[in-house]
Length: 323
Image 1 (cartoon, helix red, strand yellow):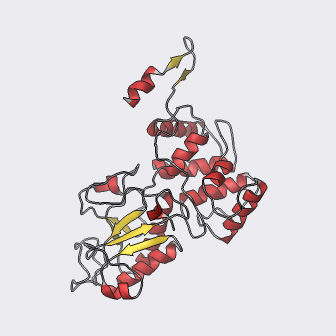
Image 2: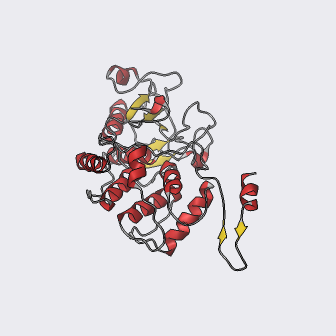
Image 3: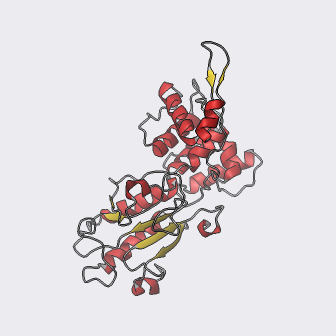
């Protein structure tokens, strides 16, 4: 019905004139700017760093919300008469993200390009030039999101793009496992959650004890996912425990009671997860009593054979995901 309404709303101004497609803004009814703060990492942080530079508050574009980024956000908030807390919430995001269009150039266009690359799995050059390829990518995203297709990155495009989920790089120490039958369609998570998991997996795999098997994360646009009561907002991800032979990506899933369960390695994995996202790991469900006693994991029914990691944001519409 939405497509039919959009088609009926096409207005042809005259023969050979531009065709304007009218569509509802914020087609994702639950779209919002993901709050980013100290300890976060990922594409949203990278975009914020480029946007800060656009406004004269340059910091290294590392994708890590470090002390320099906190200070730059505070300086920007002061200049814009916003609440000064060093946290990039909805109001700060809205003030940071300008409307950009074909022919524009600068750090804001770089922010747009890194977001498009992550959210639409593209490989646009992060040139800072709003060229034809960038225009095409913006139009394609707008069509994908069901918002007005004009090739201009305005407030609705920025909000829907920042909200849209990201897809992990399985070259970063992860392997894809789908025990619940949801396949690659369930591999999406928020930009911060994905990057924080990638960093943890990269750190752990460097120890030589194998990659980390990732089960379900979430769907591209969130929502209910078969086999799970959560995993609907891109901040929950299931991982398999580590085996003593390091073959957790090929030899099957085990429980903490299995003879091939590697407690020491699984402990290091949990520590890597927490270290990669300081103050942004809400909980880790896993029923190994030793790790529970150490304060690393939390008991929860049916979590003998996998770790359920829940990431969080400084501010989130759902209190279950607020840090």
